[in-house]
Amino acid sequence: MTDEALQTLWQATLGDIQKEVSKGNFFTLFKPTLLLSLEDNIATIAAPSAMIVNLLEKRYLPTIVQSLKNQTKQDVEVVLIAKTVSSHHLSPDASPLFSEEAIQKPLQIGHLPRVRQDFTFETLAVSDSNRLAFVSAQTVAKNPGSSYNPLFIYGPVGVGKTHLMQAIANEVYHADPNRKIVYITSEEFTNEVVEAIRSNDTARMKKRFREAKLLIIDDVQFIAGKDRVQEELFHTFNSLIDGGGQIVLSSDRPPSEIKKLEARLSSRFGGGLTVDIESPDFEMRTAIVLKKAEKFGYSISIDIAKVIASKEQDVRSLEGALLRVVTQASTKHQDLTEQLAEQALKNNSDTQKAKLHPDDVIKSACDYFSIKPTQLKGPKRDASLVKARQITMFLLKHELGMTYTEIGNVLGGRDHTTIMHGVEKMEVLSEEKSTLKEEILGITKFLRG
Image (cartoon, rainbow, N blue to C red):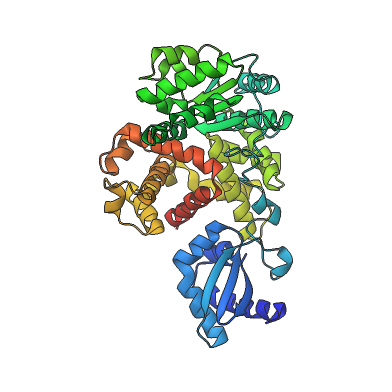
């Protein structure tokens, strides 16, 4: 079929689908799609993100198949793919959820494993709450191994610790691409130590870390209580410092407050420069919103940024709030205004959150992953179940504001430290992995109807 014929067929099909789904879901999920081909009764349909593909497959595939069957008068099989859809392919009144530039920019994994190219010093908003950490990180990046060694950055979740550490990695890499840089979370460090012991190959593991010129370990508080891991980190620490290597660590608390941390390691952690990052004030949050809007290719006024900043306290939540505002404007074909931003974010109020029940979150997660609540709450630790369970922990914390103990109680009586680990792990990984972020957004859509 010609492109024109495909376009005509798909617009007719969308007309049928529009009668079967809500207006919001139609404009959000279906309007940005395109029928790419129809060959041998196989229809290939493009959507602008993996998240939308996932939602269409899970919730609306039978509707799409039936609507295409009605139009073509033949049985068809539907294949959905994530692919950028240029605006000229869409009907004149269509409005893609994200621009082509916005689809391609977020969460791009760059030249260093686990390090995002867009996490640089230039893209980090700076105010009094993080200025000392920012200047210290720049100093380390310009001359690694010569001052502030180790650099220990601590602060609550979502204040930009990971951004700052990856900015150091990017700066050092660009200055000398041949310099060995290792960026790793404490959980991954733990896993490598355990695997090396299991496979009787500790020499390879030691070489990997001790030959690094820049070693960055995120969320180092999670090594607390792991004696063999702490021992290996202690020897790695000494080897790097003696060899002129630079160490950068992050945690949610200062070294002295990390329980079950060996005294010798706590002393090493505090032997360089320890700086904290405070939660951002209103002006800082406003600047962050403007930075993120620029990154995604959106043009918003400072007044709209102030509205968003007034609704969220957490840095990571600001990005989600910004995307909700932009999506609302796109799906309703309205201009971005302060009033629209207020309307788009009203569901984030504590009053709205209070209307949700933990069972609503659990049901939404189970529906999304096609599992049973008994499996989610049970003891099995299959990778897929652990992932679904930790995402549920994250949503219970951020959507309902529950405490770690409360979350543990509703998820089968789990210990609050297990919940804390799961939530913080999702907070970090959702910044680094676009697929995980899309899954969280997808479940949130289920939750919000």
